[in-house]
Figure 1 (cartoon, rainbow, N blue to C red):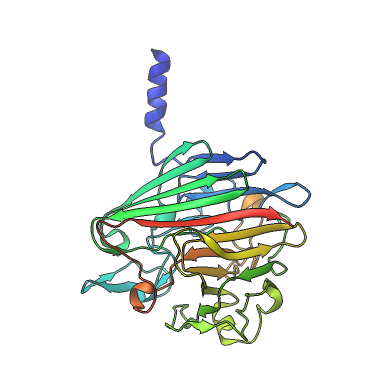
Figure 2: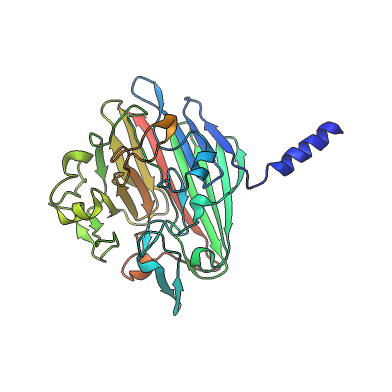
Length: 353
């Protein structure tokens, strides 16, 4: 009786507002740790070509640090309702203008002041699959509709982390959910990602203005620093004297994937780290990917083991619909209506070469 009472008390204490860590581990020894706060991927232990495991994402040692250091740049988090930027924090839907919380100059970024990355999610683990659920209230951060969103992380035995997103709403709304992991395939000792070799299956990208808002143009990458159709080191052209490079301080742009929107995940990008031999392959159903080279990391934020995170220490490949789509009628729509269910899948597959 006492044991049953104790178990009940522990269950009541472990509420949805308690930071928890869940571990997914496959047969090869790969391990992924995820917390219910922000649905954050805290660590990914992946092998190099010699079979040595190391953590390949930036972040913190404990979930409490993500809470305490709320100004961190979305390390490993699920961001939403709208990943990336919405110009001037406003959009019009069905004839009504909605004003959002602005948190990036005059613009809304990654869901606003208290987006998905700063919420506690209801978590349930079954084997190597972790399901996280969150209900976003009508007009939370200015977005219409009560939105029920689910994220399922699954670690497979072929060293792939599958991320499945689904959502429903009771009012028409806009939605663009992604994962914001910062990858450093060289492991904890690596200093930057300039020597990483990147291939992006994108013949076009969306150029931006000074506020990093898309201009609406779909510009060919041919002849520019944005051409990664053939493998190229990240650092080869990152400081080239091109307007778009200067505006982003490097790469911080949406790439228009040649495959478009697909029902099953298809190849979007591949990153090869030549020192360790690690390879990250990104597959997605989404039409775009934001390639970001950690340009705003300045060393002030200290992460795992007290290490200062400096400029271009890691890269992000955020699978997505395009930034500012609610204000860009020529971009693929991000509108979700009652009776519809959003389905989106992204796969981060790790291998060696």
